[in-house]
Image (cartoon, rainbow, N blue to C red; front, side, top):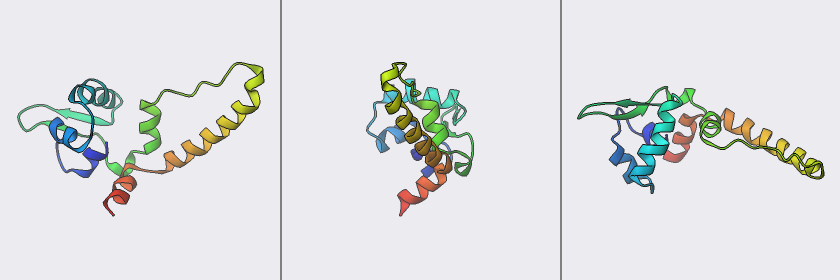
Length: 113
């Protein structure tokens, strides 16, 4: 997402691979497919095609990206774990609160400094 946000127009998959240490197969079959399905990016076909963000960077929060791609937290059902479960739930609420306030545009701006 950051690679796409930093570039103007369509970005070819090879440009994303050069910027990240991720295999072409993993990017195409997992990451890009999931992000397209989630409505975060669009695929543009043709020789000048590639991928582009589906929405402006200031309308995409880091929280929604992570929430969409990450495995959700499942609290323990064991009653002995209840005190620790309550702590983890509070931590997660704080983390999600922070991530939901942070936009892709803010992350890209901080990275450029």
